[in-house]
Length: 267
Image (cartoon, rainbow, N blue to C red; front, side):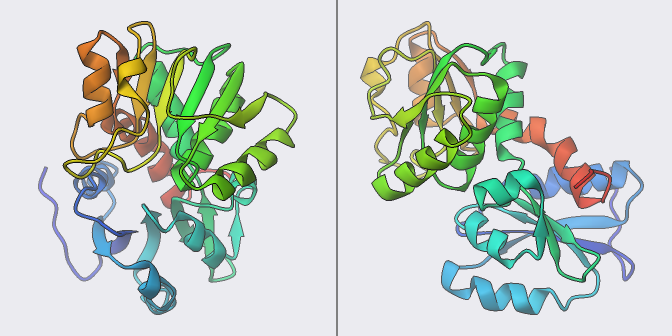
C-alpha cells in the first residue's frame, strides 16, 4: 500500500526507551491508510529523565493528534494526562493518549485487553484458571486487571520490586473479585503463565520464571515483540505448551488502539 506523507499528514508518535523493538509504526500507519486517513505513527526514543520536557514541548505541535506509550513511560504519561478512562485511573497508567477537549490529553490502557485477546485467539480461555503473572509494571498492572475481569480463579503476581508488586496486589484485592497474592518464579500448580517483563529482550537475560518447572499442560503468554518468540515462550513450546507471543497481543490490540486514537472509542 502506497502511503504519501505531505503537509496535511496528521502525526502520531510512539514513545519509549528503548524504542527499536516496537513493531507498531508500520502496521498502524498502514491501518490509517486503509481507513483513508492521512496519518503516520513515528517511533520516538526518549529517556525517563527527558520525558516531562518532551511531553510539554510535543504538546505544542499542532498536527500531533495522539501518542502510543511503551516501556518505561506508562505511569509517567498517565500523570501527564488531564483526563483518562476508569481503567486508566484505577491502574495509574496509560498506553494510548489522544487530544482532549480541554486541549490536554485523554488516556487509556489497552495492554490487558490486548493480552487477553491474544490468549483467546490462541485457544486459551482464562475463566476459572489459576494464573501466575511476572511483572507489575504498566503492562503487568493492566494484564492483572483484565485477567481478573476475564474471570481467572486466582492470580499470583511476581515482581523483583516487592513494593510495586504489593501495591498492585492491594489495589486489586480491594476490587473483591478474585484472590490475588504474591507469587514467585515457580510456576508449579498454575494453569496460565503470563510474562509482562522485558526479560528476554536482551541476549543472556534470565528467564522471568523458572522454565524448568513448566509443564506441557500450562499455557504461556508473553508481551515481548522482539525477539518474535521470546526465550520463555521458546522454552514453553519445546515441552509442548500452547503459547501466545507479543505480536499476537499487538494484533488483538491494534483495532482498539485505532478506535481510541481516532476518537471512535467511548471514554
